[in-house]
Amino acid sequence: RTASSTRFSTMASDPFTLQFCVDDNLRIFARMLACLDRVGKDLYLEASGGQVSLRTLNAAQSAFVKFHLRPDFFAEFVLEPNASLSMKVYLKNLVPIFRSVAGVSKVWVQVASGEENYLRVQQECSSGLRKKFDLAFEEVTMINAVYSPDSCLNCLTADPMTLLACLNNFPPGLAEVTLSAGADALTLRNDPDNIGLDDQKDVGLRTELSISPENLHAYMPNPASSGVSVTFSLREFKALLSLVKELEHRVTLRLEAAGQPILLSSEPRSQTGAPFSVESVLATVVEAASLGDEDDMFGDEPADEPMPFAPHGGAPPQQQQQHYQQP
Image 1 (cartoon, helix red, strand yellow):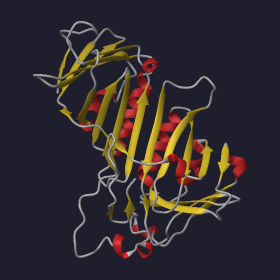
Image 2 (spheres, one colour; image 1 turned 120 degrees about the vertical axis):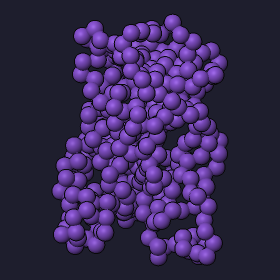
Image 3 (cartoon, rainbow, N blue to C red; image 1 turned 135 degrees about the horizontal axis):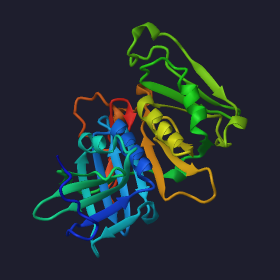
């Protein structure tokens, strides 16, 4: 990575495949990158048809996050005619550039692909200082989580502050949390024997909280079911809720069953809409006793490497890793 203030390229001066400028939405863009950094190590950036998507996947392949940015999110947007771009860049190199944007008025992001591949970030500060950073990237085939929202018959929409306030009651370092959508209330609880706690003095402590439908913006459990309970990773869930809170959006959760992924999205509080959308897929725990012989994770034959997402048009693989049903 290099930084320079001697030359500042504007949108039209260099032959880049992709160029966009962010000004009014700069803080939102920085928060998106920070959220992705809390989930995965790589940023997958795709640009086509005047739109940009930012995605990542965690190391356990149990959490997939995607931000979809529409053209009106940017102050300027230039993509070469009939061009598309799919690339991967290391988040630990990119996120520090956007860590402090209080004094930055504009940021240009430019991607050069061809004989030399690099991602250029240029910042224009209100003080007059100009900075330039060049990062290496890798061209990749874009991948997507494979899921079906139509199969999720339990849906709820809430203020993220409500859910975060509940989660703050759980012991620090808790690895997983269980969410139950019943006919009368939404319940959050932990496994008292959870070995994922950092502080072992809290092992055996059970915490359970219930939220009545009146405290949710919308609550639509499956009327044909007595309820559904799913267990999933708490770290990524809290990171996403914190981002949705900062965006001043509501969060929507769609649940199907234990072992099937949770689908998380956001919606603006106002009727004017937003120039971006947030989508996430979180894997849920599969009880070992519920697995058939064909799903035995500890059989004699090792399973192929699981992959919870597939290239465009690809079919989802049917493997499991540890106790997670991959989305």
